[in-house]
Length: 344
Image (cartoon, rainbow, N blue to C red):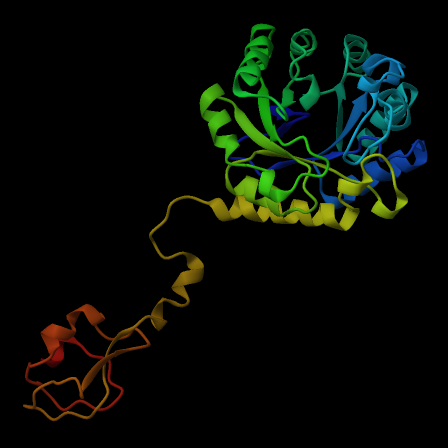
């Protein structure tokens, strides 16, 4: 599939999405700087999140609306989303800035009004966040736009993923990618379970990728080696600046390293090959072969004192040693001569 003219798939370099989330810290100037940083780092796209506290939850003080444990321990859902949301009146400014810089921008809508709003901005694609994967009406609304869809699967079981995929396809989604995701903030690498991607690919006949909440880039690079065609990673200007997601976000130089190393992993996959590559041809001459390691006179018998397997590879292959030993030398041969079938 394509997003804004860029092809995404198994045979394409990984599509790197830099997730801004709430790392703008309520400052539109910082949000613009984040877009510039993503572009400079080589990311393919910047992703926003389109919601308000009122469209994602309600302002309620009961215990079930409180976060217990983890990065946001003690926060009320409403207050967290009020702090982290990207104001809707910023969106056009940010979309225009991204277009000017030459980087794709799209968003995760969290309700139907957000989809309508993003359609008014001609968003080129949509992302369904992990916690919204079970919101089938929202998925159908997004799919009805006909735009490419990326859906994260954190916390979802296989049946729930199947329901989401079927809902999206039935509502008109022809371009669909699933991102394996572990919804821990941050996620220990030992819980990333990126082998899940191949199961999803086979089960649903879609391209797959990774939404990565680990603290480094290694898991993403490994995911590309396993066939991930999309990598999504939160990023910030500096973790020291704080912010809702800063603790598990990459800084600019780390994002750049992610892009470089994911592309390197993709290039390294290549194709099954048992023929010497161009790089190998320069070293093939240094493989082992049979050499005369002691002067021998015409008529003498070749023994292990005269012939050995050594480097370099200008003599006959070592597998012929048994055929050489015990044979009669046809001519005088000096120490350091590569062995040939003509000599016995």
